[in-house]
Length: 119
Image 1 (cartoon, helix red, strand yellow):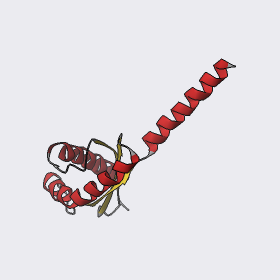
Image 2: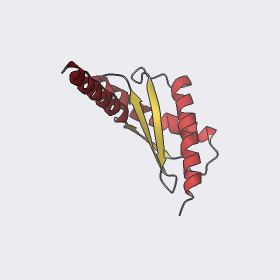
Image 3: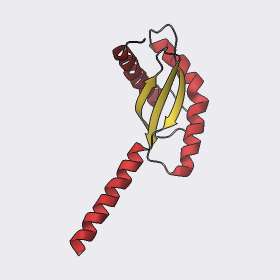
């Protein structure tokens, strides 16, 4: 069984390094401004799910996902150079819709409160 604290530290380090790589090294125009919201690492360190969010519209989300999937190999190689791990995890990018859901819920609550004040 893998040590949960070690997995969390590795996930945090992967998130920091990938954020830096996306900002400084990745030149793919399909990948615009994204924010990495979290990383989940498998217990054997073979796979990493990287969650991201963006303020772009839904139609450009598929373009961003395509760009990230295309750049995953490059990012894995660069990550391997920066981390001191025996195995560099295979990176899989997944859209995190929690921010959009939170904004939508906030708008609904604001609308409900404004409607109640109007009564």
